[in-house]
Image (tube, rainbow, N blue to C red):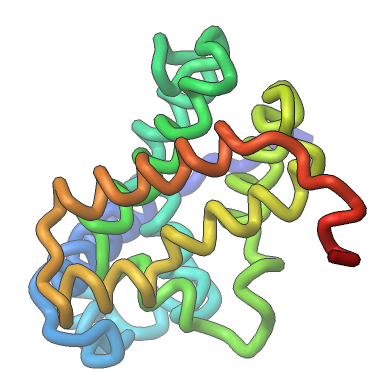
Length: 202
């Protein structure tokens, strides 16, 4: 049986909802201020349409996040250096982390809302695991990195949405300074050789 294509009005509604949600999150003071009712009103659709299309608020957030992330994903999967797969590992790791940081700076409230949604661990979220798997694979090609699993978690922790929001929103750290600090931190991690086992006993 052939797969049913979504109706044109359903496609238009979905696009209108994503556009409305995108605009609301971009100008809100706090992601908690944006409700499903607000999004439905801004999109000109009923709340039932939102729940049928996305399931719940977390589902809508994931859909919007993936839509905004699509250009970055394409660049990572098949683009040129420094994000693309042909980049030397020591150059690609900081480029990937910079891309994550810039994306979250450009989508601060959306990223924060997504990471705070639901009651499960943010480390089990699909978008987090995707970045972790990619970083782990690239770090595995860097000499001297002996635990690419933990190192990936540690580096990604520097791009958590709540930290980005605190630094950019509360501390008013300039964007370029944050990028430089992350690049410096990543460089130190990559430059460090394996830790000697006996050092833990000294």
